[in-house]
Image (tube, rainbow, N blue to C red; front, side, top):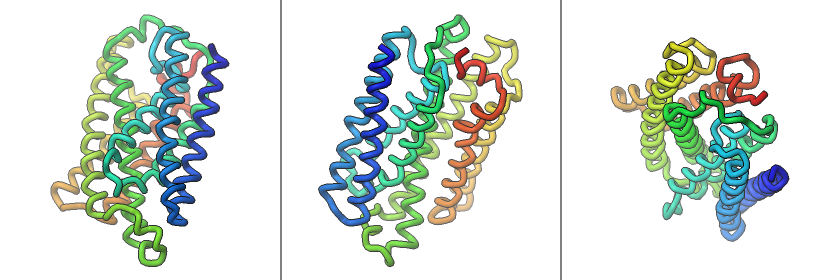
Length: 276
């Protein structure tokens, strides 16, 4: 069963990498057919990731939400599915795949680097609050990936479109900015539910809602950073290029919580996410 999972994951990495290459070549050289192939490859990539998750789920008897390997793998699935949902029947948004797919590919790389050994479903994991916590963490990550891709497209369209004609394929900055705003508003709501449900689960497990764990702290910092974006947007009509730059930098802040903290620090989350 593990071999099938590895084969599916390997095929998914290759498919995602080829999709990235076709996206970039098709976009830069204005090759519509090549670009369409790159976009089309996202669907089999999602299918392969779904297959890898399904095989692991069937083998272990629980969903992909315990170890870091499982969490990142399911993050890949959610981010890809959200990207396809956002761009569905919106051809003008197709070009953001040039930025979204490499981010997803890097996440797949993080999956491969993580320990993939089997994990046991202990009583601590049998909580609806944990499932809510993890599901909304994935929705937060997926929304931020697409919002970041839109922010990058805003900057390139604004400053590079006149010099490089292939940049004209990018959606209009105003439209991208509006969609980015909606995605960040959604991600902030998702993050709020993630933090609250995680706190309730922590209280059930350790008898306290908040323990100042580094991952908890960086999650709160990420929430504040994106909350400030919405505050500036509503109060001062913060949008366009400054907002795009802010969103890109904010994603780097969120990446600390999603990727760096679990690897470099000994946190409470570490004891759960790295199977022993």
